[in-house]
Length: 191
Image (cartoon, rainbow, N blue to C red):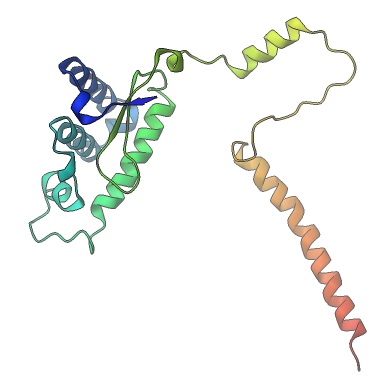
């Protein structure tokens, strides 16, 4: 992925970025929240205008959330909270509708200047579904003998229910070991 710096945006790049912004703002994750739409639009427009250094919590609160000039970002977490919600909605958009978009707009944690990336064409090709890969492999090699199904995903990607099932299976065993240890200590103490 290529991050385009501020000085490298041509007019056609800016036009493409604005078109991407419109796609995002009209998407499902952003459809219900005018506040989030306004926030993202402000951040992208200020960045494209070369005013990314002005994107501080105080300025965002005044310009986007109509806070008074007495707004104090150290005591009012409004902008940080909304930025976290915006990040979540961007992840949701790019995880669903925007998976194959050529332009990726992200809001890194800890700042309000968005990263705008132009993705290379090979990164945009749809990846085959896991079931398609399985069917292709089955056609290529005959299966002999018993076969165990193995989840090859790392544990951090496995469904949450599997991780919780393991915990609930191990918890009683751990409790039993601790109880037996406590009984052993109690029985061996001096009277």
